[in-house]
Image 1 (cartoon, one colour):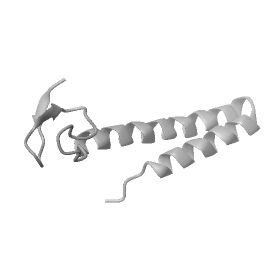
Image 2 (image 1 turned 180 degrees about the vertical axis):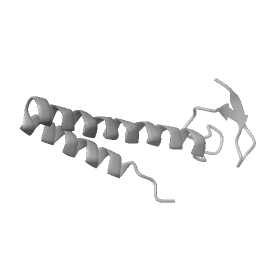
Image 3 (image 1 turned 90 degrees about the vertical axis):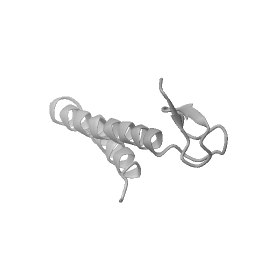
Length: 79
């Protein structure tokens, strides 16, 4: 866990912290990483849903795929 200076106030904070403990400014690198992880989970659910729908149970697979699409869409950044 590395310490990095806050761009706003200069106080040291963890590189994984979502916000600076001194001024509360969001840490963009940590926030983007968390968002990318949630988007990856959504994509994995879509793929899992498609496989389950094709091989085992279409209703459950459809629900998983739809849930994955929603999770991935909610965590997509539009530059």
